[in-house]
Image (tube, rainbow, N blue to C red):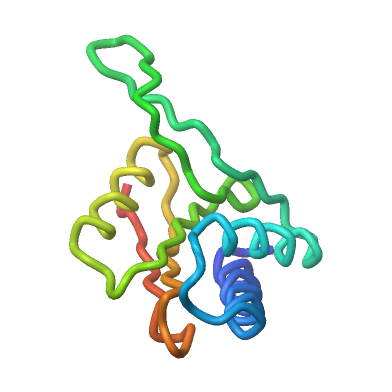
Length: 125
């Protein structure tokens, strides 16, 4: 399955979760349900993946974690905020750079319509 197809599956699953739960819950609730939905759709989902930081040739555990890693290719960062801020985009871009991955999605579940809470980010690598 290609990146675009996986993206469609991710967004469809996110919309299903949002329709069932609505806005206003903690990110962890959406993460648990989205991981379950994506697993039902035959995607490999890893939750809270530790992302080490390499600095000065040393691998450091700086406490960074990817919310979801899909098929070892796509990072999904979940939010439950009033609106995306530039720091949210910067965070995902940093995660993509540190993980050496190209594609990520910011999903904000604190919206009336899920389509308004989606941002696709591609890292030029």
